[in-house]
Image (cartoon, rainbow, N blue to C red; front, side, top):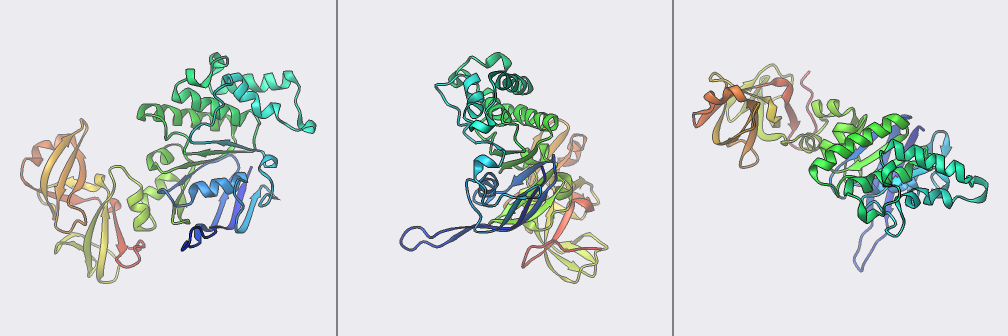
Length: 364
């Protein structure tokens, strides 16, 4: 099912004595291709969950239109949208077995859509096999692990055979190892069902690992849309550059002078077609090469040896934070004995932004 959001805006009314209107989603335009998994990514309060709620019908847009295929569903009730929803807290009925939890939405279908017992049992068995919980059907939710409860919630959403699957922070209640395993399962399930899926998260690693495309949001607005690696490699502004990446990108004050990029009056790269000006320089942690002839100099604070890589924690007076991190090869450890370390920079890992509006400057 292709989904199209056209100029969608959501404004919440004033609250309290001196309250102001809150524009949670601002002029949101997006086309989601049929069968893709899209990650809505951004910090808390950016409008991603509100967007999801408008897609499922729990909230109505203040402005704009929402289309499922060619059908305008902007004002359509949730029960008619054929949407499956998985919430952050799973929302399972504690007094019902796994079987009853999954069958609940089928047992409450209206007369014209009512299924026979055999049809319901067939659907139950299909989704239980798909999410690998066939041996848990007689248990109660309290007898399940967090990951198993999450699978039950997904099965309950899938049993309705929805056209669209919506996942709202579905992994945030799981521990780190379980999050990794469960996100792999979600991707596997989505590929098997080919259901158009929107996955809301604030975890950039989560979104990048399973999404066909990511939508980075801030203050209700879309900042950038694209394939995860494309957005990581070509951030459109400083916010996107800082939001994606772990460890996060390093930010420095710099200058462009006659095509050269200068940090602390040292030319670190050359050949830029950008007007002379003060700029913001952002360098990915993997963008540093230890080299005694390198012109970028940093004062080493500590080393974190991680096997194949070494994380160098260092400072530089141009850095906007107290320290920055450089990820270098493990075999370079002998070169890191000195207090002052010289680096060369990988040009494709260095991004230059306007100092005023923080947009990416084109160097071509």
